[in-house]
Structure formats: structure tokens, C-alpha cells
Amino acid sequence: MFKNVITLSLFVFSTCLVLGQEKQQTLNMSKQEIEHVFLEQNLDLLAKKLEISQAEAQLIQARLWPNPTFEISEVNVWRTTDIEEQPLIFGNWGTSQQISLHLEQEIETAGKRRKRIDLHKLTIEERKTDFEIVLRESKLSLRNTLTSIQVLQQQRDIYQQQIKNTDQLITGYKNQLNQGNISHSEYIRLKAAQLQFKKEVVDLSKDLEESLKDLKNFINIGSNTTIVITDILDVPTAMVSELQIEDWIVHAQENRPDILLHDNLVSQAKKQVEIEKAERTPNITLGVDYDRGGNIMRDFVGFGLSFDLPIFDRNKGNIKEAKIGVQLAELESKSKKNEIANDIIEALRNYIQAKDLYDQIESTYESDLDKLLEAYVKNFQKKNVSLIEYLDFVEAYLDNKNILLETKKELHEQLENLQFAVGKDI
Image 1 (cartoon, one colour):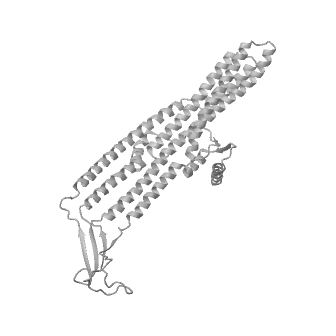
Image 2 (tube, helix red, strand yellow):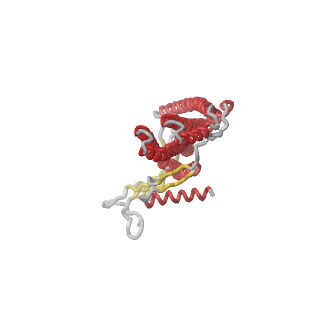
Image 3 (cartoon, one colour):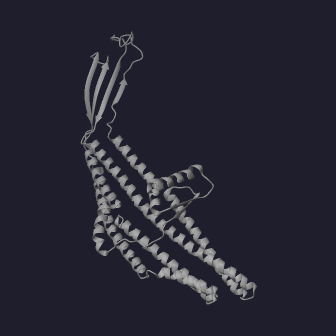
């Protein structure tokens, strides 16, 4: 069932992108469905996958041997009077032709080719780790964006409900005003409250559109599509304890993609040292020559080899530079491990503070607020409370509803930050 929903969603996205319909499309999706689409369609992730393919192509190239070199030279296009006759090459041509052929092949020594292949394999692992880093960073931003959208949706619903309630009250007040039962100032005061609620809805809608724009960029869908998140912002149920911190630090320092990247860079630096040391050993070039009519032998075939003499250049500078590169990579890796430990400690403390704040709120507090608002609306309609008392309570009600939503949002964000620091879902 879930796969069918995702397939349908992807079809709708593709249709919107291809047809470019002017009519606004609305998609009701859960957070889980959105994350699935994100994994399939995020452009940054697709680009990182292509970078992996690039690195794999470079490995294919690194496995290849260098091409041999073939040379034709000493071909004469005229003849002298005292030329020595030569056998025909083909047909009636060749009695006065001289020609020289040369074929050579470079042979790499000291395992240079194998070491470069190993370095390219490490580069592929680096690209894969880069992908994981971008994935986890993008997922953190996506989840926080989804939480913001949920909060904005619920805040807008709250104010829209107040507009609806106020509309009903204004209708009744209008009749009372026409009958002379209330003052015009009270009627204007109620209208002012209604206008304030509408302004809040407009401001929230702007913020919501901004967050939806970010979401559309994350999942790569057209601008003519509106997304409504069907999940209600609830309270995270993760079991978090300070007793887990040591295990989390060990896990993160061994498995987080950013530390794996630093470990990979250390391995690459060490492999580069091996390559630079191998460069001290000169490569050998094997050659075979054929010469026709160029010396005392009519058809000469000879073999040879050549190589540089490592007298002046023993590649010492590059070797030293590569060794320093290893030291730098190791220092950065140690620094990253310390940073990871501090990230986890900070994220855990922030989450515990957010959780403690939320735990101070009684479980029935929000529902009690809603019931109390209903009672105030009824009592105001019956004139048991004054306009000032009613509006004061509505203001307090809205403030508290926003505090509750912001507290839940903070709790979600701090949990995501903790999971990001640990390197896994808790």
C-alpha cells in the first residue's frame, strides 16, 4: 500500500513537471512519504551519485596500461645516383627506399600502477562518504523544514478558527449595534481583533510558503504544487538517557560519515607517500627497431631499453610533502573526533532541557485550554463575560497555544540535532 502511494505521488510530480499545468495541485502526504520521495528525487543526492560514477570511471582508466609508441622515420622520397639497390617491398616499388621503424613500451616499476589503482579505490570510497554526508545533512534540514511546516499549518488553523468564531460574534454584535444594545466602540474593538487575526494568518501563510518552497527544492517538484503534511505534530517518544552518552560517542567516532571521510583522507595521504616513494625508481622503456638500408645490414632488427638515472632527483621534496600531508590528515581526524564528542554532549544537554520544559506542561493542559475557550465563547455570547475579558482570554489562549507548538517544535529539532550528532536514529 505504501509503495502504491509513493508511485502515485511520483507520477503526479512528473505530470506536474512535464505538463506545467497552471492549475494548482495539492498533495496530502505524510512525513514518511516525503522522505521517500526526497531519497529518490533530491538533486544534490543525484549529483553526488554521479560523482561516485565519475570516480569509478577514473578507476577504470587507472587500470589501463600506457599505450605503446610507434614511429616511422628516415623514409626517403628521392634517390641518389650511387644508391644501393634494395629488394622490392611490394609490387615494383621499394628498390631505392630506405625506412626505419621504432616501437617502444613504457613499463612502470615499483608497483606504481597498482598503488595508483589503490588510491583511486580510496577516492571512490571518499565519494561514497561524501554522499552519506550530504544525505544526512540534507535529511536534517528536511526534517526540520517538515516540523516548521507542521507548526505553521497548525498555527494558521488556530487563527483561522478564531476568525470563524469572531465572524459569528460580529454578526451577533452587528444586530445588537443596530438595535442600540451595545456601543459602536465595542463593535469596532471586535472588528479590530478580527483584523489582527487575519493579519496573523497572512503572515503565517507567507512563512508557510517560504518553508514549502524549501521543501519543494528538497524533493524536486514544480512550483504549481502545494503540499499538505497529514501528520499532526506530536511529541517524540525516543528514550534518551545520559547513561547512553559513552556508547553514542564511541559509535559516532567509528561510524559517522564525516569521521569516516577523515579516516579515508588519512589512508589516501599514506597511499600518496607510497606513490611518491615509488617514483624514486625510474620506469623502464623497452624498444624494438627495424632499419632497412640504413647501415651495413640490409634489414636490421635491434632491441633496447632506456631509463632515467636517479642521480640528481630522488623525489625527496614530494616524499617529504606527502609525509607532512599524512600528519595533517591525522591531526584533522583527531580534531574531528573531539568535535564529535562535544557535539553529542551539547546536543544531549539541549534535548534534555527541551524535554524538561515540555514535561512541566500537564498532559491535559492543551485540551483544557480548548475547552476553556469554548466556555468563554458561550459565556460571551450570553453576556456573562465582557468583551475585554473575552479578548484578554483569547490573547492568552493564542499565546499559550503558540508556546505549546514552539515547545514541541524545539523538542523535535533538538532530537534531530542529537540524532545528527550520534549518527543514527535514536
